[in-house]
Length: 342
Image 1 (tube, rainbow, N blue to C red):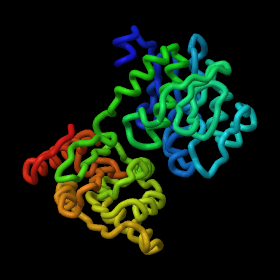
Image 2: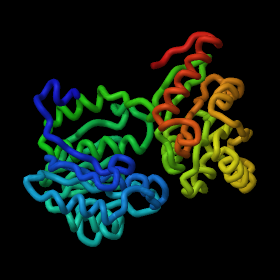
Image 3: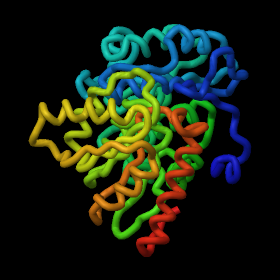
């Protein structure tokens, strides 16, 4: 929006990411495109339940030049070695992420990378607290990490990917900087709804898989009262359960998956009794869980709706669930005192 309004029209781009494409969809020819579907793998220990690799590769192969650039991720998995300066492409990339490297071999436009683990030849990478753009050996500062208004390491990755794609599409760097400094996020994605009696209520209804909950939990330093539930997609919950025991003070489970989540986290708690988690409760619906959250949350804490399951047990989609959460929080604000937020 900022780039288009102040710096002229922006060439079309597309992002390849889980949930954005349905079977049979094929995007039109863009000026630049990017594969972000490997992000979840990096954020959840190398496992991804996103777009199948063959389909990702087919979309990349379909668009030859004049496509200016295609952007592929290097992982942020802390268990894997970072790419060291001067090592780009070839075997070094394959050692870090063979799936991404395989996609790199198949693109027909100019290849760019983004990484939070080390330098890249062309694209964007994180260097301490600085986000760096690289093109043909020239490095430029995109922004500093504290200029990103969104919480979480995954949003740093999003900015790196957006910067790499914008650079590939020919967007001016000042337009990118203005967009980063002015972007406060979108609804249902770690959306701050309100602060009620010193407690911040955050709507992350978009989190319909356990790995999304992991990313959300890692976005906060404050103690968390977590609302989790919905309908299970038969994905692994072990990492979410372990992190919940470490970072959540109170877990409130709701919906069809509520009993299952409570059981998985309860077993993880038994394995780590010294964790932060003080209590686990189950509720039939989200409204009851929100009411209980207001009772157990302390000033300075965060009540986080990050369900981990789909909304289809009780709502039309995640957006309807998020809107209901927002309504419930604003009702609490009216009952319990002053609130601020949006």
